Image 1 (cartoon, rainbow over the protein chains, first blue to last red):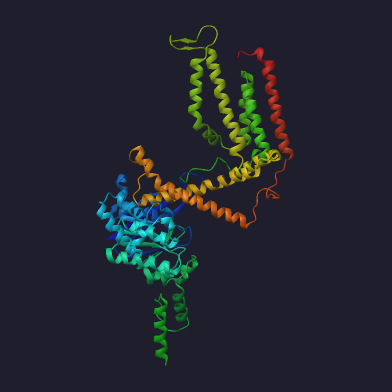
Image 2 (cartoon, chains in turn red, blue; image 1 turned 45 degrees about the vertical axis):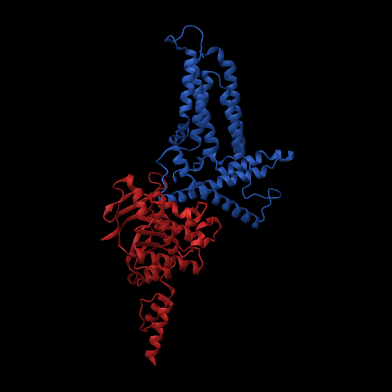
Length: 285
Length: 274
């Protein structure tokens, strides 16, 4: 069964004013339980708007959002429970840290859930491990950490709620390659260990190709493509038309096969490409 | 949050929109003085007509203008009631309930007062906030206060502070919105609980907001220094304010209107009931 389902969802900014803008138009998607789904689209295509609908931070103008087959707005008073089940990490989450110590900040979510102290401290250790930080940062002041470390603390703050669905809005934006890898690996590990469903927004097609099972492409508030990674990245021309791209190395493979060299089109990493080309070279000898 | 508009500037084109902001500030002050000069029914009527003329000349829908009066409706109603019940007039009261007497003078006073406040708000908001962008308003204030530089007041710096403050209101509101959403996503609850609990719930918003305003201030200061900002000394302007014929005309018209009101006050008063 679909973990999350959007049915005929539309969303408007400034409804009823002269500046009314339709940010999402009649979106219908289903997200499989336990999958990692990538959400791509150019700036202003409605990605962040869509994420905020998933945990009930905004209400759809039209249509319904289902979590495990239940309309999340069925009992508006219990929307808080939905927010614990669908953990959202917003863009640049490091700016939301506020506590004196990292430990207290990560504890904010679990405390709001009303968990016992033992449970909370266990979750903190677990969360900090997922994002690859050592336990000695727990007593530090979050404002003394580096940008990448702050980001990881903020993500740990959401992971500590053990959400069934983890939603991340550009978790790696503005980080160096190593910082990016640590965060994305942490997300992957979280899925492996808990079986959670992951939804992730990124502008890096390389990251998306490496990480995601399924990909949703948004353009001007509409879903233009939704399929497995291989299906979506085989539409390189379509993606380029709406201002996106396939990973560089995949593009190379597409170009090679367009010139009559028989390579596998579904290649997304440099190492796979090296193997593929080595295989071809051996064949020609 | 998104629906809060900054100031009330209403972007249409009109003769009033095109006036020089300095002139508009002077006009608004003059108009406020005139509002308080009106003392009898004829000058009050003329004042209402003038307010209507200003509204029509500004091309702003009447509905929007009336919206600006809404927040002070309570004050208007309150002053009207106080005036009706507490003014002691001459002769017999219109209504005598023993503990409360209503005199005709009280009612007249209330009507005058309500008209004054109403015209005051409508007139000054149309002349200033509805038709002038906050930036050109501060520009106008800076120029009008220019002479104070001679006695050592840092007029330019004040104006710059105001401009920056205005510029950052929407930025900080957006930021507050984002932080609120982020904390809500972690289960923060801002609407339920006792007063103390709700005040405590604001800490997770205020601390990140303060830290980011300081960050913005530092970044902005660096950016301004990179572009060689060093105060008002020798600084030229992109928009040079110019007084045109229409500005002079508006000024003359308002002064003439003021003179007319004073004349009516003096010469028509003996023939009017109040």
